[in-house]
Image (cartoon, rainbow, N blue to C red):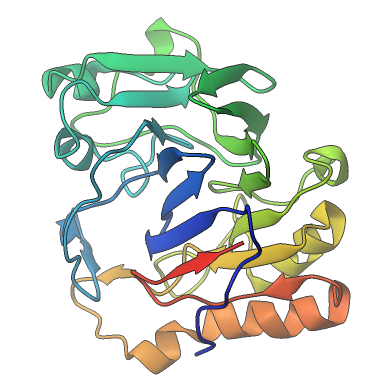
Length: 263
């Protein structure tokens, strides 16, 4: 597995905690994406174990309402007054049950300020409905969808959340320094609404960042299926191979869960 690489002066820092959870540090601001901070959620188990939850988060960015991206128990670990940004139309009942007080809803194209950085919500091609006993009454409000986010400061970072390729991706975030792209899921295959290694490399060709880090791979698995770390890392390696062919000008760094790199 490639080692963490050094970044440039005046840049930012990212830590891939696992799955879709990334700590982005830029211009004195700490942002956490889709925090999943438990060892097990429903039928999914995390490997390797999580050391500890990150502290001092300025805002949490939620991409959509699926259980492996919006986990109320994980959000509660960050504190009741944690600022949480969710897609507009997301049912808030599971969050309110946890007495989480600072919840903001945004839609594609809307922008919020978090300290010295701006955070712009972008569209994503992914169904965002939540299912199960804690699902909110979707038909009573605006249907929820999925978002990505662009963080804009001295550097530009794109967090794709969960998405497939979609028209307009090439113009989504010009001048990117870093793209955090999902390259797999938690099962033996991925379907529509997701990027696999090749489609993620095609997205890379359209986005044209300086650096890309694959996420959403190798961290979660179903409790009844054992997965070796070598096999779990194959989607990230396949993405790196496809990226070398389709977007050779983009540097790809593969991080282990919990590892950090500068950009």
